[in-house]
Length: 305
Image 1: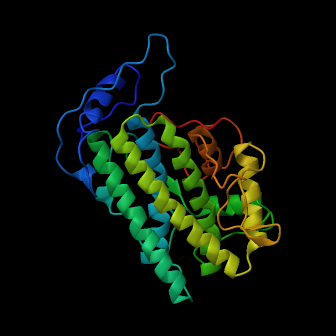
Image 2: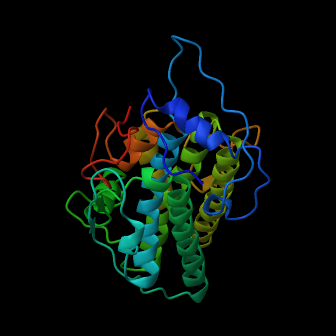
């Protein structure tokens, strides 16, 4: 759809012109891999002196970093291998994946859920890479082994000397997926106001809804298995890491099921990209790497709050 996108202030207007050329076109499924529609007026330039928001390219590349992580986790859990090398190249430092193996699912139902989610995450990676073209960031170094143990220890899910293997059984897999999915939903919702191009905004909304379906599936399975107390510990750890009170919710509330973690208006909360990084870096401070991304994420949105 576009050959490149900007991640710096000076070139942002040029990116918006490229993206905006398709903003009013009639689009269907998979459009980001299709040809261009009729040109539309370029986005208006921000007033001189106004605070510069992240470009659409920067926001989509941040999302791509998250999709790499989810894609690798689910691919290993279901298939026993990670993403194809051809889907991990791009700008920035290309990293390897540490950990990951096939989960010995006992329930055919949960295995099917995992397979469907894995297929969706693979599609998200392909979709975002197509949208970004040559500006797509490469997969950064990802740790899906030791990071889970660090997260489980921080949540007091295990003892300070114990290890947590998310691939050991389907219960551990569900807890690990719970750690990811809720963060993905809040990340996409938080990113929505930053996207200026309507075509990309609609695409992001579509991915958000898919991630919400995933999260509800994982939360439902945890509830059915009576794992509310364990999920609550992970939820509490996320609250501590992102530093914003108790917005994050477990799967039980007032002794009832809490599959949809909403406020009194039935609305899910948002996380800004820096708060998302606090969680995936497993650090409540201002850092540029750690946790699931030992060398940090690629792109300009790379620092936690």
